[in-house]
Image (cartoon, rainbow, N blue to C red; front, side, top):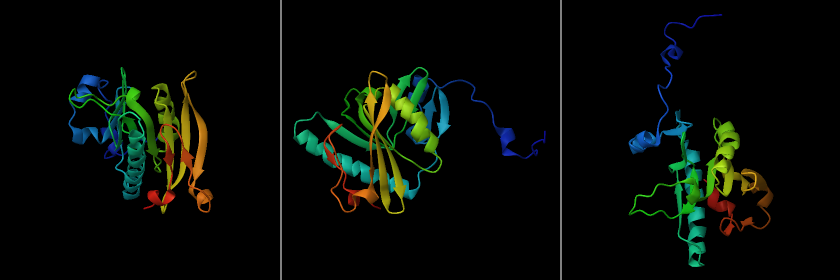
Length: 210
């Protein structure tokens, strides 16, 4: 077996000494928390999003916020939409993700309530070149097991959001079932796609362009 060069960065890798607890994570400064996720107590570093990824996230937040406001005006409970938000899926071993976009029930700010899976109605992940496995396999299973009712996997092209894969939780199996895929190039000459869950929405592709 060939030995690594003495100056290889791989030689500097050290195992994480212990799993991160919920209490330890809660004490981490926000600027650090933004750059990591915790999976089964182990730190996972998140790559900085590309400008296109960030823009797509903002477009999706704007779209969801607009429909959330209409839903609340129609009598729905208080709803909040955020991007890159800290979401606690499990305390032990700690599982903490930062979905690109989340639609969730309003939190009690006075009590400092933390966003947990039972607050979330929809989480959205935007697929990047390095996140395919995480978004389509790992998080698909984690969000389902945590009981989040809806999950969208979003893909981009050079002009903006181009594909939205929609999944809905089968509570008997605690697994997601694929309920449909919206594709921008199939809607260019037809009506904008509509969904009724978790809230009524119209997916206007022009709102999701860069």
